[in-house]
Image (cartoon, rainbow, N blue to C red; front, side, top):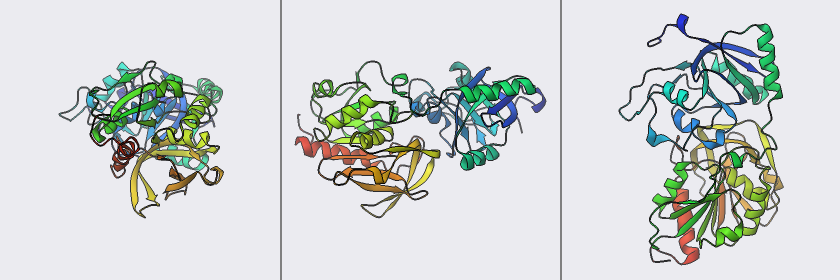
Length: 381
């Protein structure tokens, strides 16, 4: 049932993929056109966190869960100061909200931030296409089309710049350093290199007991050490991890100087810094229900994931890092730690948002390492 609008009155929209496939649906969100790499996310909830995750910069997100928008949007659930997803594809879009926390509905939110959406297409068929053939570039177009225009849209998708090889961190990183409060000297200070950080990562570090300074992606090791930190975090972010060479160099120079914690793109940067290699996954891992085995404990964690690339386990130099977590779906590397230094990283998102909290212990583990390394245990630094 459609609330407040009949199917006949819904404006038309088209999704054209670079392989020539065309889907017909209905427009929602901002009226216009958007082009990007199309991916799918298997989360049942958390569409606002997904849209505002900087790691989705340059991508059009397809939600596999069929009903999206029914609980609206809350200012408290933003993962950045603005959305970064290029477009939104859903089976059924709810134009009404029912949630006491909601500040606005998803339609007005998407209009405000100019996010183009399409609903009413067979998202299962689209997802199967990507699972078999891999991610594709696509265009969402609002308005009537004919065969000639559809051919133009397909060509536009083909001509759109690939994410592969691109350094996208300057598009999402903070332009200036910023600090979270509580700088009274009683807590260990952690510097976070911002490659596209989510707000939840900063909050989790604070909850674990740290003062946090977030710095731009291109901050040098000398500038980092001048802030007198006791720990370093390499954040998540979008794009090909091979792109930001300056980040590889910084991570290599910082290795062993401070306890270090890499998350998602930060995990990949750490692997590349020590001579490992990354590869692009067929359709990426995007969702809140991926099983990961902790090789240190033998336990299985259900994790939130959002990445298109992975570290080649066999490429990692022997005698430096050892695997700590493995993806149970495809066997890819999900976590590693240095054999000597207090340095570890994970490919998934322990802060969740959205997703389960099985891996939230990693933030406490990191702060414990920071305190042990700097002899800080709740005392003045």
